[in-house]
Amino acid sequence: MPSEFVDHYTRVLALSASRPVSPGPLSRSKLRLNEAANNVTGSAKHLERKAKLHALLVSLNQNTTTPQDVRRYTHSLQDISHPVHDVANITGISGEVYTPLDPEEVAMEGAIIGKLAVALYSAGLETYLTQATEAEAEAEWWADVEGSRASVALYLLQSMLLISAIFFRVAKSYISSTPSAAR
Image 1 (tube, one colour):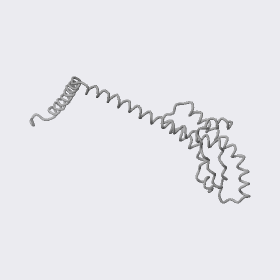
Image 2: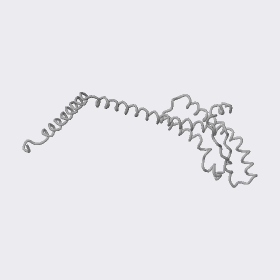
Image 3: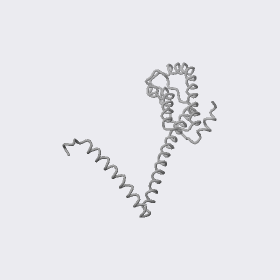
Image 4: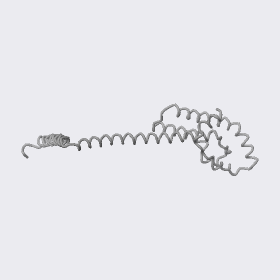
């Protein structure tokens, strides 16, 4: 995957990359030996990780994202990023040599996180607008009822009929449930 694609796709997401932590208390010669050994396996890991990040980014672009999808994508991103951001790897406690992150991977992670944040914001905003629309329709209905005396009288009559029907139903069930000697 060319880096131009990632640069073009994530240009708006300007992320500041921090310096990686030092690899830990390994000697320089042992560090070089481990580096050489990890370069062979590390490149395969980086390619696999890049491919997974790219697939996740593409799937985010193709679908509309619901909050449930955000949760699923977040777990996928954590699974992909877990070995890289492992505490033992960052602090240098593990026996593995810290390999700096590829800027493409960092950019793709940032783009995925940005898209997930925008999807959550979008879902929240849509919920807010839906509730506001319902509240506005209800407020308009009440304004129409309050607008004329006939509407208020009709509402009062309907309410009284409903309340009296409920009252008689409760009274009837109370009378039928009490023994006849108690009456």
